[in-house]
Length: 209
Image 1 (cartoon, rainbow, N blue to C red):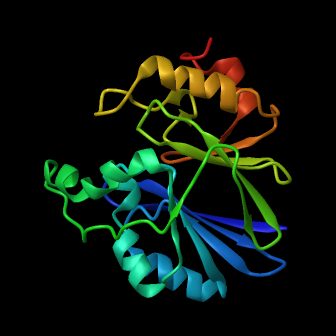
Image 2: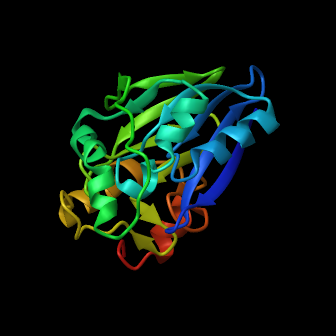
């Protein structure tokens, strides 16, 4: 079994997720979006052992809590290689919006399409889903029917593509080839807003009809 905590954090209310494997208490943080110390405190409350810090992509609102979390809980940071440059420039990008936070530390491990990570006994499959941002990935748990998809697919919407590195056609291809091929009952946990399902978005998402 797994436990999933959703923490909307920061000025853009970006969802940070804590994934706990209840058999081992090994834990992953997905997209530490803000206030890494608060994320670390939540981990302490749950009694989890942080083994992975997973980044769907490196827009500043998804990594602003990374430095504080890493300082409190020195677990390895996982990122796709194509997202590294944006991670390096995250504080500069945020400053354009008068948002400031500590510079993110460099990543420790590289993610690859098709890779399978283990959070305790939980298998986490890496899906390559670019289009919203370079090196964007989603994390799919087939045994639990859940996908953490960052800023790719939302309830009734899709990720924006007007930021540097965005590509509308590529985003739609990622959604159709990587996400819409998942079972309809798969729960989609996005980077902003409420959860949805693959089946619901197939039927009602205006960008996909």
